[in-house]
Amino acid sequence: MKIRKSQLFGTLVFVLWVPIPWLYLDPPDFLVGQPLAVYAVCLFFGGLSAAATVLLISLRMRVSERVARVYVFLFILAFVGAYQFSGLAPSWQCFGKKLEAAVGRAAGRNCTTTCTNNDKKPCSGWSSCWDKFVSCSSAGIDQGGRNCQGCCFSCDVVCQDDDPSSAQPPTITGTVLCSSVRDNGWCVGSSTLMLVASDPQNYSLTISGTINQTTFTCAVANNCSVDLPEGNGVLT
Image (tube, rainbow, N blue to C red):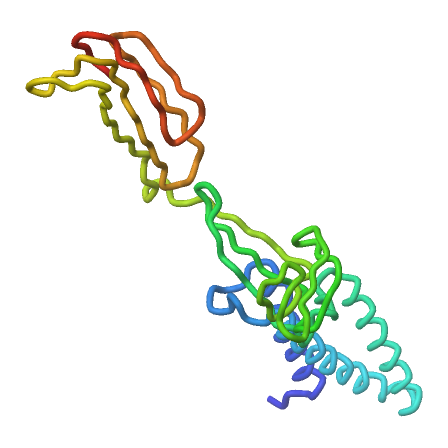
């Protein structure tokens, strides 16, 4: 069976255009960190060229070559305009600029900050990412006197919760301090329990408990000092 050119180029349009929304909505893992905008533009213009060829082949059978080329030109302009305002087109100011990414940790979360619009030094301007004016001189010094390679003017921040099974609980230790110690370690003066706590997730801590069934609560902090009563007792 003989395949017509219009059928061949029509299939090529389908093959090139279908992956474009997929790149933005659910890109595969092996494309993470890749220039998806560049891939999308290449696919769009490749598919557009194939679609224009199909249209030109079809029009040649009905109108003159000159009129057919005019229609194809208008078709290309219309599709480029529609693509630009479709939401699938990239920000053209980002082309030729390297995407910078940094990974940090918030309380119990992993956060990735990706710079979506940045310039190499020297540069300056308002940054919506940091909500302040940023700059980087040709000598590589920013507005705060630190070393820099460029300026980040906007960014995307994505945070994911840690796996609960991998989270570690807070820990606490206690030490008894005595103002006067006598034979066999007996405390005959005032005594204080010093508590020190820490949290691997960097959350704020409140230390509370009971001394001989009397409750106590310290201010929010990682350490606490509790006066101990005279005699034996149980502290929780």
